[in-house]
Length: 153
Image (tube, rainbow, N blue to C red; front, side, top):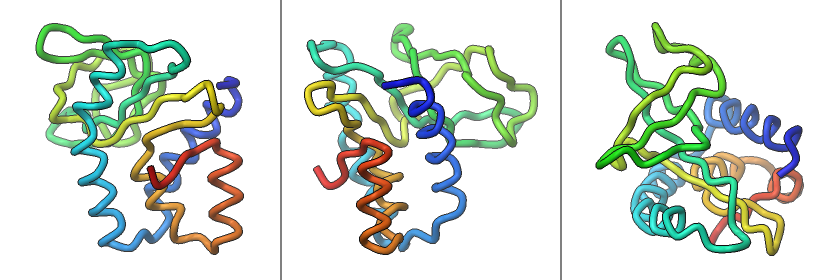
């Protein structure tokens, strides 16, 4: 994925989760679907099949008694847990900043994505897809296409 598109997608992911009024039932279903599919995603990530890449996870990061959902890429397995370097400074977590390594468990993963290079689109992104569904249909389709998302599979 081109760097500009990757950065835009990250910024829009954060903004969308904070500003669009997703229907509660849609968002709850998307969270359940994302969580239920984490083991399959991790199996795909571990296998690293040809034609797939850009693996990312949306993780509940904790610091100073607070929790923030943050997209992390370049994550690694470290025993029974995972680690990743923060690519940006969290907005509401004291003591954490860009460049620091955070650790998390599978249970902390809220959502996930990866690029299917055969179609040039991103799979996963359950929460962002749910948020975008609140847009008028034409705008929804435009955003899904522009961001390169596959929603509904």
